[in-house]
Image (cartoon, rainbow, N blue to C red; front, side):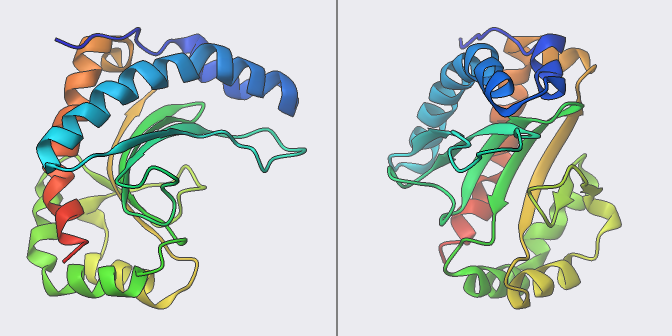
Length: 206
């Protein structure tokens, strides 16, 4: 059984700290140790589920020189050197919610190919309309819409045709949600979410 120290109000309040250096120090001290503990367990789960080695990456925000990050995350991908150019799983925090994603972001070199595959198998994607799943078309923004409210076909066509377009599917939990503050329950929900998204992850390589 995996248990980790759950996220706290203080973790979410990290994103109200002024200044790049001060906020990054708080991210490193408060949040990243939890990401490492949680992320390693999830990476082991995914490696076993996918029968291939997966690798944990924790956001460093290294390119930032002035503006402090508005969110932070862990990512799990099948590449040891990086994750942005690969389909990947994410768990992260904004100031008001926790997100769980299967992420296809604009750095993917085969974005159009993945979009075409998903459009061909759109019924597999549309199964998520009956669940509490949300979709984001831009990972830098908080906004996400319930899957049942989006037009999956047009969203995928935009992902295919627009260079900066993205497609992320997963779940959001508000910062005050009791499950966010229960490490064991949260771990199981994230694991369950990743398991449900695994067929889409696999499909993206077909």
